[in-house]
Amino acid sequence: MDNKMYVSSSPHFRCNTSTTKIMLDVIIALVPAVIASVIFFGPYSLMLIGVCIASCVICEYISRKIMKRDTTIGDLSAVVTGLLLALNLPVNINPLIAVFGSIVAIVVVKQMFGGIGMNFVNPAIAARIVLLVSFPNAMMTWVEPFWYKAGVDATTSATPLVTGDVSYVNLLLGNHGGSLGETCAVALLLGGVYLVIRKVISPIIPCVYILSAGVMSLVLGQDPIYQILSGGLLLGAIFMATDYVTSPYTKWGKVIFAIGCGVLTILLRTFSNMPEGVSFSIILMNILVPLIEMVTTPKAFGKAKKAKGDKK
Image (cartoon, rainbow, N blue to C red; front, side, top):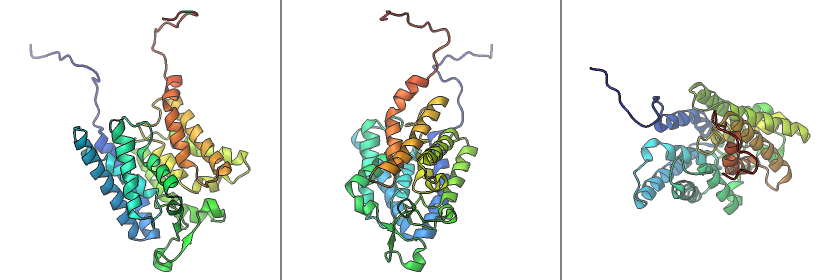
């Protein structure tokens, strides 16, 4: 008989998707935001992006060697973390602060919990929060866009969430102050569409996140479109809230998670002493993911319910 039966453990069906391919798609999706950052904030933004990516890759390599684990820099997850961290920073920040943020993201948040797939919060977001608390002035000083007109270090400005007077067109195109990757809404939306078409992310989390933030804005008497296009909401909703490791895997879990992110974002923007609430809202919901999955995971078919008083 030529036909042979092979016995192996699950999974029995495999696809061609790999961590490296997924991360490469995320990098491609972020290219429009990187291009926009160079257009508005100058070539210095590329240097900052390079510092963050190099720092994250080096930190991952060294930490894996020290911990005597296999090297994982080839899966590009460290590159994505460095890129996302850079896009959450102002262009005029000290590169040493960016290096410190990379160490926090890779060594503390990711590798100390076991590496990719083991961290319970998003590394880039956690690093941004640490930097925001540790270096508030550096993290909240913004450069005016169109550096070639005003000069890279000539002027600083507030973000739209502070001023509240930026037009929708400028919010869409990125003609305002902010972090490298959060200003140009069009670039972020293009990246999100690419990820959905490539089936890298489900549209549930970003769409529900944006919708719930808009509804919460209306409830509080604010302009929902302005709130959605301002700050890091689109960057967070599309690229960070959708992180496989730190977001729920069930359909209703994704909905609950996204609603929590959207509502908390607007509440924090409105009532906290900081204008931005995206990072804090996502990381708070990251912590709640195990509970959300426990509530939304379907029961196995045929599994008997526990009788009242049964302790087994």
